[in-house]
Length: 277
Image (tube, rainbow, N blue to C red; front, side):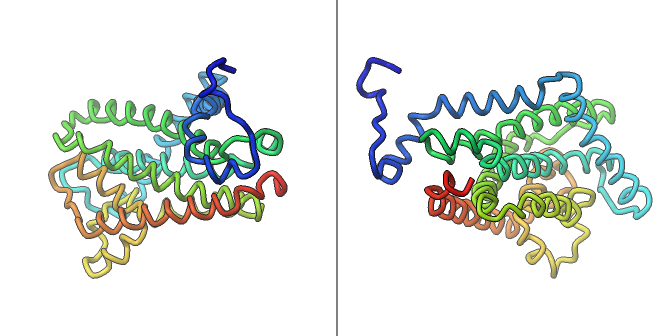
């Protein structure tokens, strides 16, 4: 502990309510530690860890390309079908991994939560970093795939951080909500994998949103990941990809509503975690 008084944290009744957001910053080193620990656990056997990050999206891309591209013969514009699919897999797998990891994070750190004071929001937040590392690995794979097909990405690729931020905020908000629910109702650890698997097929991963009839596009965009995935395709693929601004706006609204609900419910139930966990 530092000798400097401003670095000393005094535990007192009601501190979690009065200084919660300030404590989030003060405990940033714990956030770094938990993030680094989770990355090491995922990649402790380097070959297996990296191989899984590569094999999973590649196999998904191959299956979707065969089913939707070869058998169903759905259109992909002037873009090679594998690239169209893999571009959508980037945000989807980031969201899916972040949601699953964060939803189980409180249960996985039960011993620490029941014994030590710190803002519990750090735990689900740190678990998302592993999904970001997987995203970077997958992005390198996409670059290699584009080289293979001699496909030049659009200049709009500079907007990728915006859509990645949308996926991150949505993952964080949903992760906060489900991780808190998971403490109280342990059945959620079985529900989340189903949600992720179901969402993969109803989101425009294996196909383009352009195949959805115009009259249903707004309703289809009630899935916030539709706007994120379409945004990735628009930014990377460029030509032939329509930007559905209404759906994009709806996604932003729903993402921030999810974040607000997640923070509200997490903070409401946080003081009971140590007893329930």
